[in-house]
Amino acid sequence: MNLKNNTLSLKTIVGLIIILIFLTLLSYRDFLITIKLMLFHFYDFPMLPLDPYYKIILLFDGFEVTANVSQDSEVAFVFNAEKEFDFGVVKTGVKVKSREKDVDDYIIVYDGWGDNTLADMNPQTNSDWFFADQTFSQQADPSLVWAMKDRVDEMDVDFEDDISRDFTTTEDIFAAYIQNTYTWDKAVVVAGMRYENTSVDSQAHDQVTLAQTTASSDH
Image 1 (cartoon, helix red, strand yellow):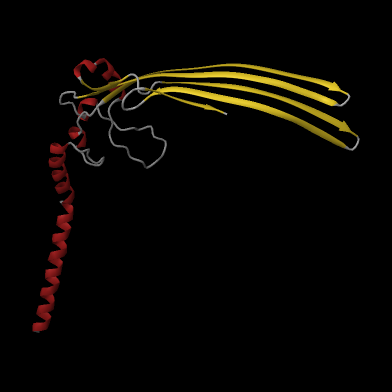
Image 2 (tube, one colour; image 1 turned 90 degrees about the vertical axis):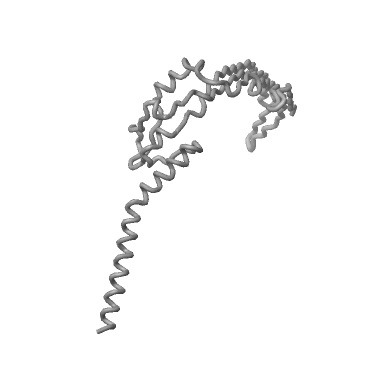
């Protein structure tokens, strides 16, 4: 009889432990959200997409504006000729090509925009994604992001660069060939030679000192 009572008491204790664990799991997510809200409020770390309050905590980090002008020009000349002689059909040709690529790149990055957060940018979720069962976190309204270019006077300039990513490259190619094809009853013989020279010259800027650098190749 005493053994039976002891067994029932053990089952009761185990049941209470299971109920306690279950109740703890129910409140575990709220506990995590509260902790993360405190941490990210002070340290400005990004919240996880599933957290309902993350859009209020995400502070403005930076706004980047770039302007890039790329010009690519090419001039080419090709000449080919063919004539039949007693010793075969002779073909010859010349190709000259000159190409230049010039890139003028400008970038300015702004940071510091008051106390603006993601909540001020009409956050929304992409609903046009063509893969099913994929969830996106909320993002800033694209129209409001585009309008930020007219509000840069409210921001602080982090850095500006109008030279380090500029470069100019020229490529010159000269090629020539001659070929003879001789045919008789039992065989065809094709013999010839080709010459080609390619030279490349580039000018850019050192990423640290911004001093002009050059490089060339001739083969």
